[in-house]
Length: 618
Ligand code: TNX
Figure 1: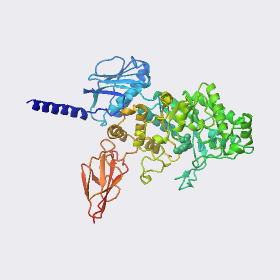
Figure 2: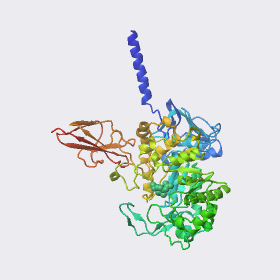
Figure 3: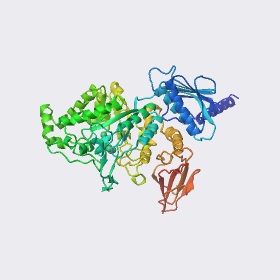
């Protein structure tokens, strides 16, 4: 009897556990919140639900939610000030006073409350948006739950290079929307490079009139193709457009950090003002038409160089409320400086050891100027060479060493290196034949997700100097906004999670197969492009067997279908649908290739994954 009783108990416990497991334990929010308690029941949003707010600031966020429901679910809810039943209440009252990005989201049977200050309230709303159903025609049932959330890192950034290719204001705003929807808070706008100067500077109009354009552009791959398109290319943002973007970003709680490159990556500027190159007869220069690193850089000996750059900074500062101005500092060859009488005189007059110290002089002098205007600088990790500017923040891109050195010297650091998969211009899959043209390298969704951007060699008490993490989108090989979207999605989802969520909470399977898959199903319904991740459950591999069963495949996008071939042709929706285990039988001394793809509701296809099955029996 006792035995029977304990068996029954075990069974019911098992059932309870099973039921719990079946529940949507993570609520499909990306990035994963720090604390989630799931409750029984749900809240139903219907035509009578009211959206409630307290302060005017709260109203802005409440109105964004109202707009979202209207444009996505065709539901027009009213915005009111008095709390009651059947309401969604946005409030900064009693919000976490210590962290403006923290929020609480409580979903009860008769009310949803979103509590947070400014960005925090906005992030609570973003989480709520993510909980809305994929099916836009279904009734809106939201699982009861309570969430307390705040970010791991204060700096969560995404960069965009508009120098190599130019992207219009409307797209830049869309880009900011994508960032903000995953709780990223910084847009690093790389505004100048060898191939184009993209920000209007009224005191030096030639920077954009001449430097904003190049005569032609390399087509194809820099290393293997090397032909040119014979077509002028260019564009720039007026200061009014810059203001418009900065104001838009502010409304989404995103800070815009402008980057003005110096002393290298300056060919476009030199094409406009050749007198700022090295030597007595500098130039002529043209904005670069191909990619890479160029020897012609700003002359560090001539006072006119600093005069122009200070004038530029004077116009840049009022446009950007950001605490930081990024001044580049990367990839500056010293070739010209070595033979330039002005640079050599500067070295001598200032008792500098060599051209590396001259680079340091350059950056430190600009830092001093920028500090005097109440702003701080960020530079790429080359600014460590020859002595770091005293108040500079380092953006570490060449592995960990820069980050370790800077943090251990007490400087703030932002991690962007591709050792963490943060070069989003790199390929998303290992096989170049299945990927669009890119710069090369590898940064898969999984690589981004599994990295922890906290270099272990930074001493414990200096870890606080790691402000956060950023992915860079260099656009040498990205000439269209569709391709930018493909480049950042879905990797931005992984970036957001490493930037926001505590590393011990990360779970690749839950992220990839459930939460990201849900968010991608939503993106699939929009006009935004994204890369469909490959099918989950198999990887490219070879097995030796006469019979092999492919099982447990999962689509990478919720609701998408999996199709396969067994004849080594590339599979598509015209082939067999995978609905359960597929037994592959291989005759003696033969090989069969199983290839599977994911095809989404909108018709987007993933790359295939293949399993070669070889029967070696004679
Ligand atoms: C290095 S990252 C660069 C860029 C290139 C990029 C290509 C950095 C500071 N400089 O100029 O676009 O590699 O991946």
